[in-house]
View: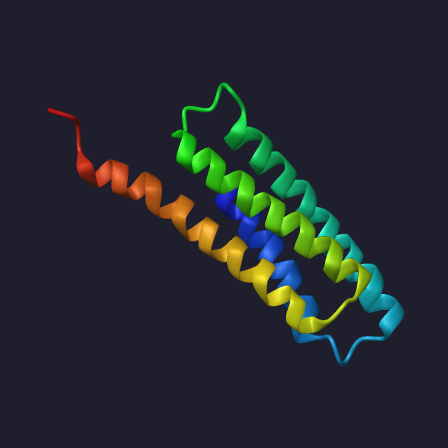
Length: 116
């Protein structure tokens, strides 16, 4: 589910980037704000879940998710303050890479088979 949500957020941001020049600034600003807010909320949930005491993730993974989340939050704020199409690339790529990793993790676990 997390993978699908990250892909959805990346797709929203990609659409804005792809239509940056052809959309009226006011409309683009509203769409950008909505997409960045969606992405920020998603990352808030991901980071909170990954770093909670109940999370079974290793400490190093928790720390990496926290650091990545901080980058996403800071980069989002910078993009809201000074919108530029190129600033969306980092957020789009991070979402796609994490989504790909999440999709690969269950597949790797399934192909490993039962522990002996």
